[in-house]
Image 1 (cartoon, rainbow, N blue to C red):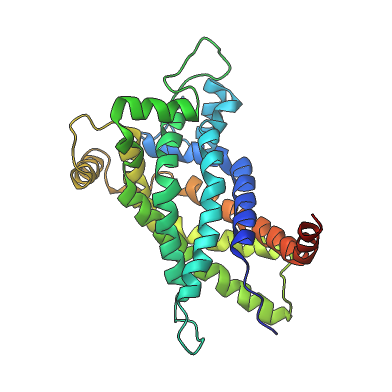
Image 2 (cartoon, rainbow, N blue to C red):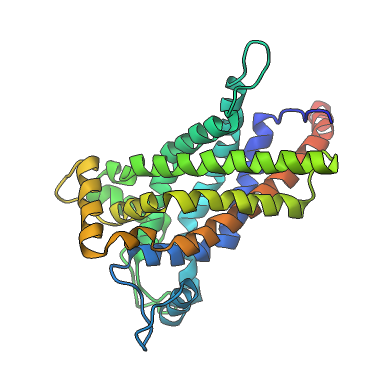
Length: 314
């Protein structure tokens, strides 16, 4: 089977951005539930005193704050996830192209290293400030059905403005080291797993383009890898980004303070709070992302000559 032609940066930008937009619309409620579970100092319980599952936490949010509350922070996510996914797929291909020997042989583990570097790049350029704004919005416990219940942060833009005004621009990059570590480990697991399974299915079926449902299934599998490994990092990162830093502690001091506080007051199990909704958020999100990315990029590739002719005619 012939090797597939390398995708252009423009194709990666458009297909990746489209995939990110669809993922945000479909999967954001699970992210809100995950954040609430991670921020809880005590295990959420129902009226009978039993532990609440992620479904129970979601129902509690809907009952107390309306169904729209599950979409708190969506503006920040949508504004961030489109460039995030565009950057992810474009830089992954860029770094992968650099990892080729003079004789044209790809480096060993090139998908892993390219994924790791793409994760760091997206964390620094987009993900960290987006996460700070998103978490601040999601942490607010107000009813979106009551117009008189006015929260501190009204929307993503107002939240970013307020954070910068009250805490300085650097506050948007609180937790950037942990975010970079989380994104790097996510993509270092995500891309190699996806491309390994994709190559296996292509060879097994002797086909070039996988059906959409197969791209979604292997995307779901690859997406689950990262959260299972790095949930403790995500817990500490979320706690750091949620609260201001009035003492002006360094990043390392904040990390030790939050880490020690969790261990002392909640125990080591707290580092895996929200792991179930996180897997259920990230895995289907990657299923949507890869399925949409493959479909859109394939459509762009198949119509590239038409686009060139149209542009030339103008």
